[in-house]
Every structure is written in structure tokens, then in C-alpha cells.
Length: 63
Image (cartoon, helix red, strand yellow):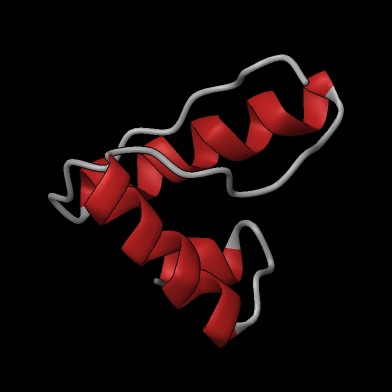
């Protein structure tokens, strides 16, 4: 939840919705960004997740 609210700037309720969708459907749209911004946020998210031992995966998909 901290990554969704911190890195992606989602509100708590939206972050919970995204987490539940990812849990139930095995993927979820977090936010849309330009390519450079998306690459930065995905890299930052992976770093934070790995340092805390979380198996989170984020990817960039074209619109």
C-alpha cells in the first residue's frame, strides 16, 4: 500500500481497490504516465519492494 500511495500518489481508497484487483485478477492498472516517468516509477517501486522483501512486480504497457 505504501508504494501505491507514495510512489504512485494514489489515495488510500483507490490504492485498496488496485490491491484487490491485482490480488483477484493477478494484474491491475495503477496509473498512466509518459514513458520516462513510468520507467522511473517502476524502477523505484521494484527497488522499494525488493529491499522490503515483497514480491511485487510492476510493468509498463502501451495505452
